Length: 86
Image 1 (spheres, helix red, strand yellow):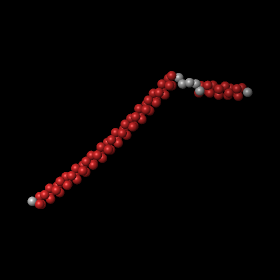
Image 2 (cartoon, helix red, strand yellow; image 1 turned 90 degrees about the vertical axis):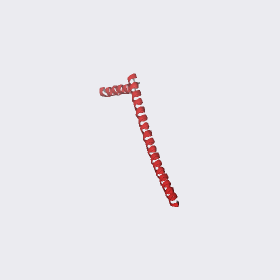
Image 3 (cartoon, helix red, strand yellow; image 1 turned 90 degrees about the horizontal axis):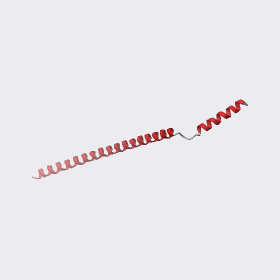
Image 4 (cartoon, helix red, strand yellow; image 1 turned 180 degrees about the vertical axis):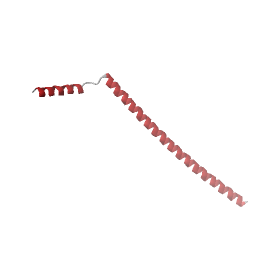
């Protein structure tokens, strides 16, 4: 009987302790952790945006180089044709 009563008292104490309201310190810790997670997420999103911008810039440069090369080839061909006509 004593063991059963002691077990119930311990379970009741555990229930009371585990269901209590958070202290101000615990609330602050949760808030700080949340802010840290938000900062980390924002940093990751910023890094992704920078990486995407760099990829797009690289593609734009490659396209510009290709078009410039084509334009130079066309100009050389036209110049060569013009010289042949003379």
